[in-house]
Length: 414
Image: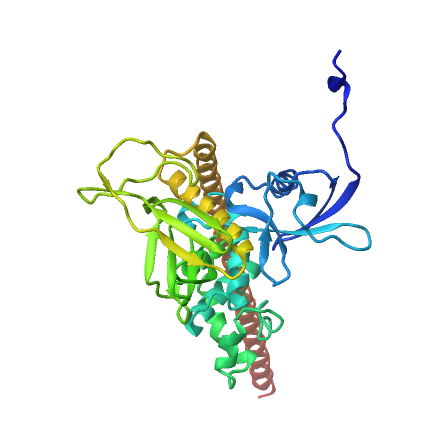
């Protein structure tokens, strides 16, 4: 038998890995030689997540930004900070990519919940800005998701005193408004959401947030060829360039299907646009970024490359990674659903129908209880009324008898 067949797979010592999601902290003990995708799969299995393609593992870099791990690489080979005491590793499990339409494309309830928590954090930390009116409406859905239906007997004034529901910027904008006054603004909206489940309230939250201009956009500071500072924005549909003073209105934007390839060298990043037919129609790209295309002569016109610079060459790696991931998901959304996704959608429909039946049943039971309680109350009120009438009648009869006895006595004495 060849000696190499007798060799055992090299193992390292066990290390502790703490994974922080926005919903809970998870702790695992894994082999120090484990690849990141092993830990990633452990997390997904533990929380029951199947829409794994939106998420990633990251750690907080020196400048405070997230550094995403390459899932096909070993954790110890990716400069992940480790505890000086026991060598443990702390990672974050966050959404790395966003769908184009949150309320339509997200299938699982657990997926929507994780996106809700992440977007809520972005709103409250003011990384996503919104108007005071939108902030109040979002807060009302957050309260519905956490506390359930409003009940004035339970949710008395002050019940939101310890809740963080509004961005500090909104609070500072109206310094004369007290916490009680904000609660008074939120509560009527909250009461109006009666009947919404946690998932439904969170879904309404997502519908509002996805309309924000900056929602789902990852920004990077860049310079154009003339050294002018700009913002590069990457999202589910496109890559865009913004003036440095305005992250809301892009000056250039290119859908992923319009881009042929991209690469970087040092701090220089180059994007090649999809070539156009002589008639002007765009050739929709159906292959991953970084792969070669056919050499067929399609009578095409060459478009100018898009070139920009970054201060730190490491940023280009992040940009390319996000571009490739978003491009791949963009193309997948425009193709036939895989069997896995079809199965997930069917299961989601069945689960939704089951919950609706259960909700209808509970609503009927609730209405029946209320009807019986009202009938019981009505009978008790009638009984009290009858008893009162009986008592009054008895009292009147007693007085009549006393009067008759009195009159009878007077007649005999006469």
